[in-house]
Length: 147
Length: 243
Image (cartoon, rainbow over all chains, first blue to last red; front, side):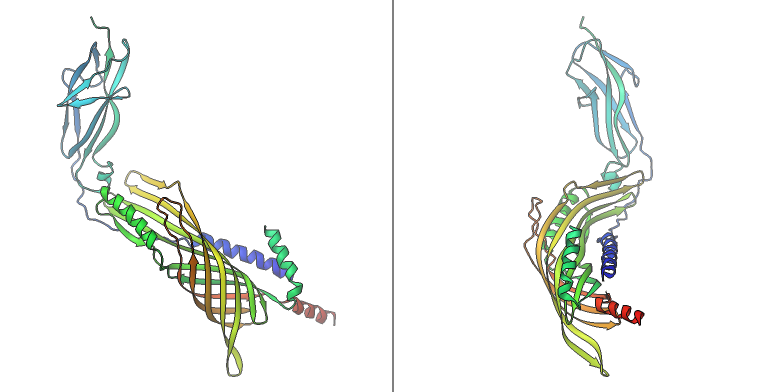
């Protein structure tokens, strides 16, 4: 009886383990939408009037830096400039620098850019299609003593 | 805990000298009629999702699903006393896919029902003078521990994103499951077919929505059992060996 009892316990535990692991609800259904893929590649060019990329701009007071972003197609969703970690305001193609940082120091001016393909696809909505990058260094800004 | 369980069973052996131990498995199907709160919950998630993915749809809405029950019983004349453990599961799913990737937002509800059981063999039907089928009824009070898990899965050409909700929510429900069925035995193996209705009381998730969890509904199942030889039979065998 004891042997039978042990057998029963071990069998029961084994079976219980098996069905516990195997029987979770799952469903493979999905809905598929036939979205037309984007055929061309998108390019974006950023330029700063009077400066080449990664040049150092010297500032002694609050100032603005003119810029131009040209995209081959799609739609510009966002363009965010940061000086070190400070997010800057940009209007009418001018980056406003309203804060003077430590004199004598040089800080990177970075751009986060998102250009959508406008296909409406999942990857486009999630920002994984088109152009999407964060904090790419465009220029360097050095603060100097005002004369 | 396991030792205590074994001790209780061993102590009860003398009182059931001619009792036999049986193990039983029943594969079944559960019709869940009270999933309204969970359907509302997945609809709330859909309303949030379509703000970003307007074409996302609910493709699974807490449907009826398979159940698995395992039982350990003492068989004593026309009665059975025992424990049973049942695993149940269902779920809801929001999905969207296109050439660029696929998105799924899942709510999976799983439960374990732990109960005691009393079964009584009510009527025997005989065919050609042999007992062929037995009509039985049984009653099983128990508790159901349910767990709701939320996960989001996104797959793109360049990457896969998986998000599991940190808060997995649980609830405890009391259950009473009366069932009737028929069974037949071939030696120590038995086969049974049964149906019943699971009645439940209480059970709300502490998830902010106070979502009611209820597995109430029709249960059907088909299964088999194996009855281990009784102690008396072993003695007989030993006596025969001595002769």
